[in-house]
Image (cartoon, rainbow, N blue to C red):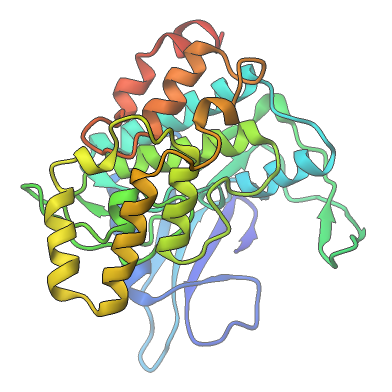
Length: 327
């Protein structure tokens, strides 16, 4: 993403030879519509202007505020590199801010559909004056600018696949799968709502607590591999996605319409759900010394694989953890 002063540019085009972020034209205009709808929400990156492509031009631009030089993924990796774990109080404050932002987005009728650390920008009120250290052993450059951690505002961007919630239970299928995709999206269900975003926030919360800088259900692989990782962490003794009203229909659709390899995929996922030996459940992964009972109530509520029982952003914000531990 290129920037000048307090502006940043998202560009779509065929030439990737500069430092701007490239995306498809459809995604750019979808992001434009969603950002206009979310205008005025402090925790959403602000759209300043758009540039309509000229005749015979493959380029179009969205001009947005320059929100910061670092995204949440980079910040988590920086903290992991320096062995500075996030305290529970820090995680609480970050999650409260993100949940408030997502709740405001949902209030406009928009589902983000791509909540992940790469789409959360850290605005600490400074310009991009980071210094560069030499490459590390893996060949990656390490940014070492001074970040004003006590002044960070977390802003949500990346609205390229976001859309308005359709009336009724049926939505358009989401074909992009990441380690932050909710189970119902990994199963290609069209019966989903804004709680797909709170699942993504639950994944972010788990990442912050784990302190590795990497996605707890990642890296991004096939839907089957991500689902397998999900059910190794989420307690299999709880009533989960197989109790969701939309699951039987998805199972029947997969068995009747999809290729044979997907039948075996469904069978393997069902086997994961039935077995009692999937490894550490969620509480063992995040023990009491790492996360209090109040904090675990939020984490487990966000990482509820049955979407009908998963916390909404508004419900999560009502939990005791945010009323007491974020002060």
